[in-house]
Amino acid sequence: AGIGKISRELFEYRQSTGRSHAQDLLVVGGMGHASSIALGIALQRPENKVFCLDGDGSTLMHLGALATIGNMRPPNFYHVVFNNGSHDSVGGLPTAARAVDFPAIAAACGYTYTARQHEAEAVSEEVLAMQQTAGPAFLEVMIHPGARHNLSRPSMQPSENKAAFMSSLA
Image: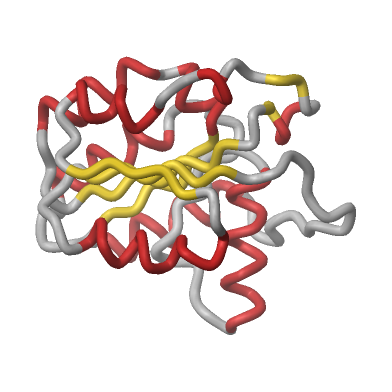
């Protein structure tokens, strides 16, 4: 999961459902690098489905990663970009992402499945549909800027998260 609020929400979700964090790498402080890290994992672990949860600002920052992912064609790579049109995790300044057609860019880069979803109720159906194809697959989820004011921060240190994640891969 990418920088900031995406990682925080994933961590909070796992906590609320009593699930382990061992299979989640929270790329805190590494804006834009989640997709490249996820690509490396997908290539090394072809038997596992690898989901990259990314933000629009991070994706814009590293558009070249889309070309690399599309060129490498990992069939187990699922890229979900949450587009709120802002750098919400680092101050809320707007991005150009609302004017960018991420699914078209991903398709031009070689992703085998691309889609955009505006309706929250349909996101889970779209995720199921994307998993029915050999990747790399790309889903852009259009969301509103902002987060709950009481969104918690991960209670584990990044080094602890990394160690648990690496252990789960071993």
